[in-house]
Each structure stands twice: as C-alpha cells, then as structure tokens.
Amino acid sequence: MTNTDCIRVVILGGSLVGKSAVTVRYLTKRFIGEYSSKKDYRYRHSVTFDNVITGIEILDTCKCLAAGCLYEHIKWGEAFVIVYSVCDRNSFLQAQFLLDTLNKVKVPTFYTTLLLGNKRDLDHAREVCVDAGQELSLRHGCQFYEVSAAESFAGVSLAFQSLLREARSLQLLSCLPVRRKLGVNSVSRVLGNLFG
Image (cartoon, one colour):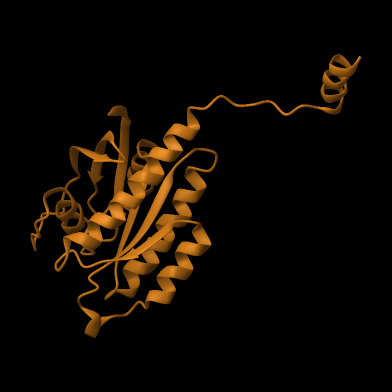
C-alpha cells in the first residue's frame, strides 16, 4: 500500500441542515441528533480504498456565510461538501450561493465538490425536489447525492468515498509535470531532424 498527501475537506451549508450529523455519521457510523453549532470542528481520519491509504482532514464549519470566514475556509480546502436540507428551500438557496462563491474563489485550482441533500427521510416535509438538486449540480459540474444521515450510514459513506476518490485523482493529476504545446516551428524542426 502507498500513502498520498492529506486531503482537506470542508463541510459548508446553512444552519440546521445536518452538516455535523453527516460528518459524524461518516466518521463513526453513528447518528447523533443534536450538535452545538457555535464553532468549527476539525477531524483527522485515514481511509483505505483502492489499496491506498489516504489521510483526510475534515473541517465541519458552523454557519459561516460571512465573506472573510467563508473565503478562509475555501482557500484551505481541496474538496467541498455543500449540504442543504431537502425540507428547507432557503438552505438550498444558500447552497447555490456557496457553489457560486466557490467557483469564483477557486477558479484556476484543482478542487472537487459534492452537493449533498440531507434529511431525505423527511419526505413528507420536502421543499426541494430531487430534480432541483440534480440541475444545480449539473450547472456547477459537481457530484450530487441525497442522503439521510439519520437513517443510513451507507448513503453518506458512498457520497464521501466518491468525493475522496475524485479529490485524490485531482491531487495526483495536479502533481504531473505540465507539458508544453509544440508550435509549428517546433514540429517542423522535429520532423526535419527525423527525416533530414
């Protein structure tokens, strides 16, 4: 098995969408219903998939839509989970704002994003349809999952593993040397050397 660099994951979203519930469910397989959301928490963990041990740091943010705080989190992260509640239309609009902001701040760099609709088990109170989440993810070129942190570890785990695989691939891709494009003169010079 080989080791890769640590992947820094930032969990973003409005208040009461289940950011901490999703994070803890992924890390411990347990569901805890109530959290104190007055400060950020950073977790260190390692995962093994495809015979590779990958270290991850997860920053579970409190409600942090203020510009300065948000930009610091975005600059720190390499992979982002944008969480919204399917029962709260306003949280979906906040997720859209976060995706827009992320695209503006991280433009030329390698990063991956997951749009995560939480509280799928509360379908009777649904305010955001699945199609709206899929459309938003397509518009921003990111992955999309709907899960229930309260009901199932499997959905949350699948979403995180998908995000981490893509993040690791981008991390490896960013380490490759940049190849220069050959100009017309360079191509003719190479051909001349071969056949001349």
